Length: 600
Image 1 (cartoon, rainbow, N blue to C red):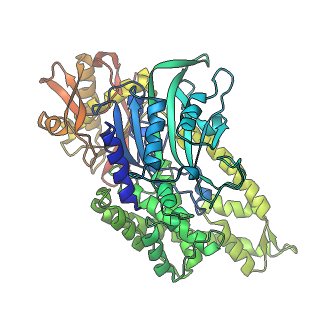
Image 2 (tube, rainbow, N blue to C red):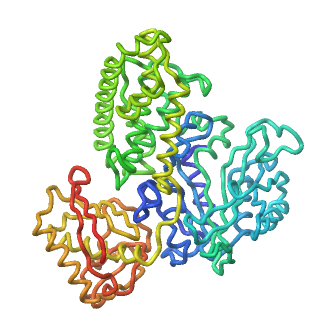
Image 3 (cartoon, helix red, strand yellow):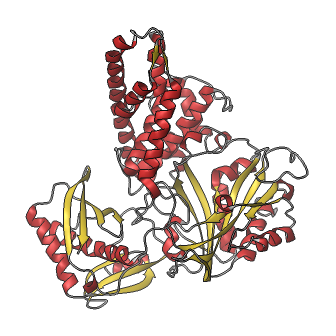
């Protein structure tokens, strides 16, 4: 079964069960500072999981592109990827555990759908702790369906949320496929030391609210959020042992083989095969990030830093396969060709994708040259050491300051008859990782965006700012992205030149004028076509559902300052916003400006 066939089967199945198909969203989440990328299918649906009504109803299904980099060092094994596609279905206060599990079981095992033998399946459920009981309800449902291999696992394995200190959360049940010919023993089940169980699907049951006192209160409106990984499921359906051996990756790997003049043997313990897998994964991820409607360019901060790291790591492995040099752009072209029908934005942004990859490769080659030059400067003193050992501290300095890979430092050292103290380097690198994690905090975790009062106010203020910029600068000033916290808003928009002091003041004054009028915020649900006819702003390149929410800020529905298609949430009147102040206006990227503003 191909990825395209699996996508279609999944959507068709849940549509037949009364679910409405909705569009997947951008890889770069809107108004959620807790993550750099969309990390799961539920991410864009957070407001609706928290209680807002979705225009498409209470039963939803879609497929969503995702990026996770927490396990980047594991990429190259049988199952880890940085970019992946997630299939998902949701119940927003409609069905709960029994229907969700029975639908999951039917889709997995029915001859009409995936037809997976029941003996190949095992599941996990929450083992319970303190004030939260063991999830015997889910286990009993699975048993009634004939699933015998059930593991009770702790919070780190079978619990979701809350992302912050309070909020919705609950147990989940995960579905696993046994990758061997038969279980290693009668007691073999997910969590077994044989490690041959591969997770393919997860049903999350949001049934509790964790309050400020740390107590778990039952939710009156229970929700279901599920996620099935396309790549892993295609792997097991086709009897493969690795996601990289599927038809998803075959053309990508063929392009790498051609460029590197080498042969892929599907053995991760062979260094060249691992490099091929890393290049395939990282190039695919970079292509999707650059091809996103809200694309970022490689940089030293945030999502741009992750993109730079992926590209440079891929280039480094290209050098290992072919020291004379090979480019990522032909590989990226293949990725675009594979996915352009499902994700048209890749074809639309082909020129930008290839251009950015080529620019970043050139910059990295300059970095490597600088690193080699710095090594040459260190060499005379290094050779004075009779032990011929380069300290890991110096090797890490080359890595941290110049981005010079440790593998290349070891190569240069070997050419001069030296070795590198790798243990000392690993220790310095580990400290660096721990510091980065503590500083980034939630930035690399999936989580709920801030739905607090101030964040909602800032979200409403972005609508006023967007229209004010159009009024002052012209209609070309369109939103390219935003990031909102409880302390400030950040707003990116298309404009070629820096704003003048007069333009900044006019924009600020126009926003404050609307705040002083205490305008009302109206919400209507309508078709996207009717929304555009009514004068509502819809973001270019964004994928919208058939039915959308339209927020109007004005004295009436027909007499308004701004009208936008948006998921919410918003305040009721502008008078509660306070004083709007632009703190900074600067460049974000070519042709895009960025404003930081606060409410006082």
